[in-house]
Length: 149
Image (tube, rainbow, N blue to C red; front, side, top):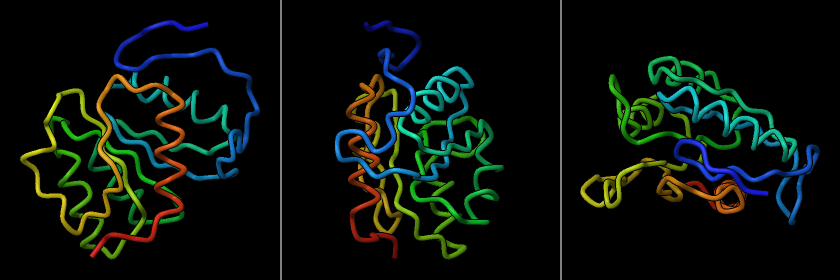
């Protein structure tokens, strides 16, 4: 069953799908998006994979949380009102955080003019994104060698 709400395709999925489809189990994800509806839906979806999610709507808080460490992957919205996703990642990289990252954007082509060099961005994903694509991108980011400089 599939329903559409906001910027994400929402699929009914069995709870407890930890590591489904060859994906890693037990990941810790830092999710940052200024839209509370988006973080709520994505958190629920990621938890169906058995992943632990810290969802934040304020990018300044995300910088502090990310700097404390312990995350396997960062999923960061590109366009936010106070700090954009690139600045969040720059600040984290400046603090020595090398956790792989995915950037989310609701604007087609928004990342083409952005310099992502040294920010450890494994992939940019356009909203709406299907859950399987999101799960796959997270799994691939965790397996990839670190790109942060």
